[in-house]
Image (cartoon, rainbow, N blue to C red; front, side):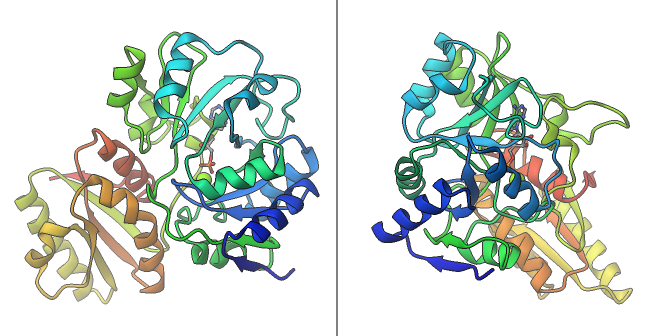
Length: 344
Ligand code: AMP
Ligand code: MG
């Protein structure tokens, strides 16, 4: 199959929507990362997503909508007043909410769970595509399973060339990490995956929020996660990544000595540091993660892919405090590092 990349002109959106309606896959930009979309009400189309990504069948997908009135047929209850407030405050935007599912949602979208995840993305091209397709679009991130999520059309092409007919190129994604996933089936919004909408913002709107305990630790052997995606290997670069947290002077010193040691052993190390610390590492090989947590979220996945192109076999990253958007950054860094996080 030839994989084309098109700018999101009206003609390209119409062609993409026709592909979706015909049960084919289209990759498209959102404000978080690129999505790999299929008609979310078509079981066979959805199955193609799992195949193209190499995604385990037990990891459910998010249904993307472009208007609030598309929700009612997908869920088995009324929206609670808290869910309405959250939709008001954060939609369209990088927030996914989980509700009891209706019978209209195919089993493979929810990977057999009784719930369904729904998002109303803010990206105008995503909205145009969903509206033109006239169906909710099921879409996970458009990477091969286990790889860092794609934040440019070229990243998608790297992973999906020959597997899908069309990639809509809407430029670089603004947020850079996937949506905040919140389970709305309990009394308090329960954050299963941190993202651009923070726990603090959700608590302000909903009165309270809680963060799942598995967000910042590996699952124990045999432990069943509240979100299936937590159980899977994620975001990993080819090289072995270690994250260092704590006092920044000590972190810099420790990374310098780990780097020099790796280099002396014949490895090809790479440092990922905060912008302000780049000069402290002298002429060691380094990439800047950016000036703050928001910039880090925006760049992280692209840097992990760059690290592979640079053939880095050992990576040392500076961590940040796990609050605000920093929680999403540390969750992705932690998973990319298989939770090799060292407090110095
Ligand atoms: P992706 O779109 O690739 O970022 O993956 C979607 C994420 O949402 C995965 O981590 C899923 O496990 C999670 N997810 C989707 N639907 C549900 C659900 N019904 N319950 C819990 N987590 C879900
Ligand atoms: Mg993903």
